Image (tube, rainbow, N blue to C red; front, side, top):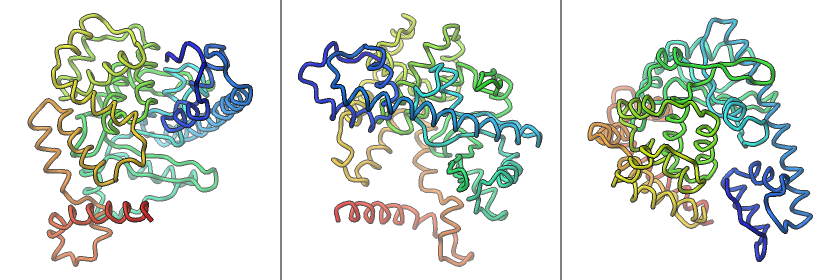
Length: 367
């Protein structure tokens, strides 16, 4: 990740604040500690050294927790693929402490969700509040659920699909599992996505969040750099099959444009030829360099919807987004005060509730 050639006239307090907002303080710390940034104020250098040690210790703690969780699931006969977090740091950044994260993410087969929740409960994780009668709705409309271990202060996002129904890339757990590799994590080999699946997932994940943080672009760059034997033909073909070719090219283009990531010439040409990428890139750049409080939550949600629709190349995916975004999920059913006989009205009231929720959030922020 290139940084300024010298430190003249730089406001390092602002730089640190921006690095925090984009979750790239570990990378900034590593650059400063390696002497790749000049004229860094001594107090900033000390602060970044302390920060790097903190992230390394924090990452190691999460890695140990993940190893325990994976061990318990393995004993129960449950297959699980860790996403992002410690495994991405170990496999792509190659050094614990170079990436900031606050939780664990695990992907399991939909059929194993209930058993996984039971195993995690024995490890102290709570928060699964979906009644059995709404389980099928939860699994079909959502893709993850947050669990928390209060004792160890760890948050875990349990995934059973890649993305919510209305913004997803079709993924079959059995195929993902068959292609998994092994990554060394504090002395243990743990399952990891194949390099092609990893990069496709990172481009999707960044696109879901409009690449509003530089860390999501850094993830793509790190993954490409760590996997020199990446099969680009397989990656491009898989993205096309999933309807995620535009998302892939967008992520790759951002990694090249912002971080000078080296891409094959033919991939660079594909990025140049994809005319729909420039408006998406412009939206991303506006978001990256925009102050968080300068846009209302309502306007951000509208912008997010526009981005999500424009980032898909297949008409089917665009229509699915518009249709499924308005569909009630298990949380809507649980929070609703409507009697079961009137539950069909949730299809009409969900947009109203979402608008009201955003208006309340905007009012609270203004107050």
